[in-house]
Length: 156
Length: 391
Image (tube, rainbow over all chains, first blue to last red; front, top):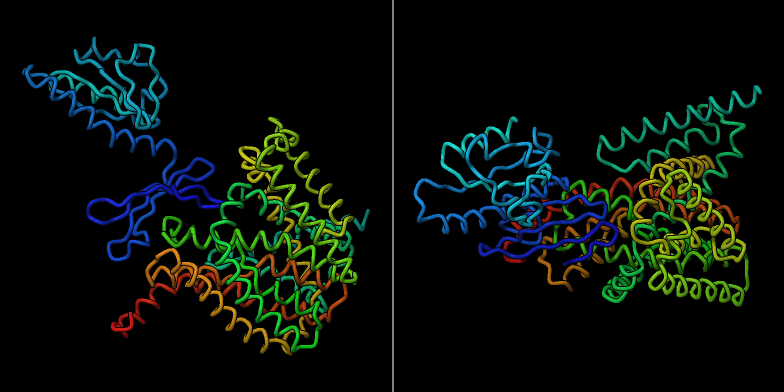
């Protein structure tokens, strides 16, 4: 972690291809995703400002596949069952509403096995679990059920 | 009643004009400070519209502007950052002082302004504008760059140096003896140490005193505390600005963040008045005679700042392109050079030409700084292409 006096902190690491990837955390809670230049590792080719919501969405996107892959391995033997990650878009129908409100199991037959929020996995959420924009919902079900669940989470 | 009407209209016109200038400045990608100064110059001696009746307000407002500039500077850094910054970057800081204060000091001596004038000019050419630099680095998306912590560390050191420098300057300007000056320095050094210790160990108590969940109460408390401390510091000959700076350091954590958010617009308002008043009090006809010196100083101190940044970045193992970027980023001078010149001129101890020289110098550097930071990369690449062997 590198302190940036007056601004915040920079946390980054060098990935295998030699480029530097990291995050600047501003004091006021905003984030910036940084990617170093190919030809000049000292400089940044991109620095993308993210709101806390957007940052947690990104963390979910990066964190959820790992969980999904794990679940996928466990369900490999059960034919016809699949695992999928579905994002809760900030401001969408279920942003701020509970898992019970979605009635996913009744309507699609698929079940929510975990919610990934800001990189943290909340396993087996209860019906009163309240979604927030940026959550990634991990759902297990048949392919038809999963398609229906995606529609419901997107548009209510 | 009539007087109040005129004052309101004049004040309104001034603020509105400053707003338009500020918008123009950011649109063309420079800091608004030079435009504020030019605004002040045109309305000053024999300007377009003579402003009367608002002097009393603008004088006080410009004092408050200085206090707020320094208070927010102190709020920007936590005591922890200052101490680690000092430990890590003191060598770069010393190189910075030697390279950049010297040209100003030499110019002051050559112009016959005596040791005090030389000291003031040394400060004017030494201190980079952290406001302009932070804005430019953010705009250019360089906050994630490896050389940026180096640049910020130099700025932190400069700001601490200001806390020592301003009391010395204030004491000498007040015509104090060497011993009196030493006492003032002793007081301020002791104050800085005490404040750093308090801020490190008991920062939350200081914060608790000014903190309040109610924004209105909070604003009044912070502003009140700042003016009180500034006034007391000024009474102790430690300079109002330093008092405010130290208070800013002592306030920490979320209180500091809230205070910054709340005071930033106020600072921008009063600081703008400060720049205008400085311009008003400077005779525009005094600028042409010193313009040559200002240009020479600008060229020399641009090179010395680039050298400082280059050197500091190289010590951190940064590649030549990054070193050039660090150097160019540091070039901008601005608000604090004018604060120093303002203190100096107000005391009347040094030739009034200093104001003209400082104005011309800051006008050049506040424009040149952001431009330098922008063009350095293509320029350095072009140089490298032309001399591949040398790179």
